[in-house]
Image (cartoon, rainbow, N blue to C red):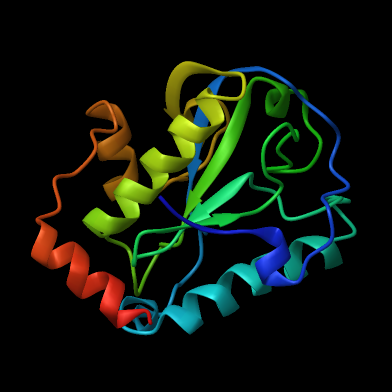
Length: 182
């Protein structure tokens, strides 16, 4: 697992409410255009994740205490810490549905970058498995399974409906992806 922690992002500990168990994990996406630049520039992935947090904290309507997601996953296979382990998700504000599932967001959107890479799918699986080690149940669902939305987009949702299988990434491709982000 390639993890980028809150500390590495320069973020303090999450102020989100504590939660020690869930029925599982819901997969999310950004729901707006995402630049294809993320495919070739890992610093753009970090900037995107930081921009999501900044936007969430500025959203007075939803009254977020932090970025809404427990983790994010970028096209290079990095798992980006959001609220982290043991914190209730904030997707769509503090609605009761957030108590049932942790949240992992793939950095794909409604246009531009819409197709998750195999490395991203692997990072989402890393997040699911990490959360399972810390109280998440076995369910893997899309955000739309609990709320009327297009989230997590058709490509990610098809993967979720297929059982969210871990992709097989050949070792040479894994090394190339690792070199690209150095």
